[in-house]
Length: 265
Picture 1 (cartoon, rainbow, N blue to C red):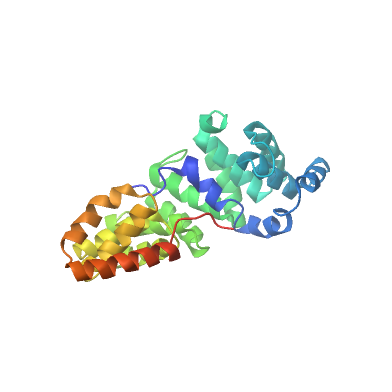
Picture 2: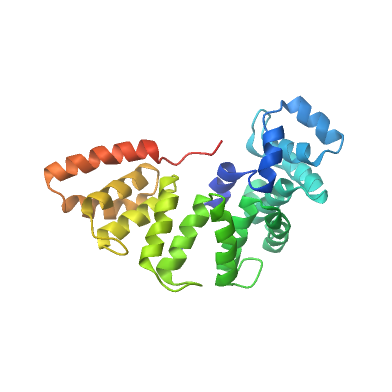
């Protein structure tokens, strides 16, 4: 199972500008567009990548993926990690952002940004090694890059590591470790990890079977848009008394407020 099937629609918006690029993002990401435009025109790579992000997301300017592409190319050519990772992401996404999909170019760009500490690039290298996109499939290298991103708090990579332990890919199969990683990602709002954590409680895999916790986490997952968790949520509910269900449902509502899926700021 791949935790990032909707990468092209969601991942960039949630995780742009982290790792090594996070420091420069703090300098530039709140600057007005006019200041970024001036800096970009003067050749500042950080201004170019941040202005590119604005055009990519339509943040303070009309969305324009072609302008974003050109700005990311300029920033990437100067070694800017955010520019490299975002340009790589655009090649990964392909036609949805108006460029020809090219996994090899994406992989090469992520390889440039990841060693600089860019979390997006690290997580995407993990995903590409896991699926064999733009490179030979390699579970060990997938785990290596997921681990680097997970150390920086990337919830998607944390969930991916959980799946690797659950399935025994690149590591010895270990349900308890899978639960630990799912829990980390779930508490950060990853809906897939929330559903998987709930199912582990439902089946008693890696944890003591607990229908209340199973209901809580699967209900939070469904509320966060993971409708694949619906059947597990219903199964857990059927194993709860009316009083236990009421308590679990109240906790689920509280958990949702604490662990909802939302963009990072």
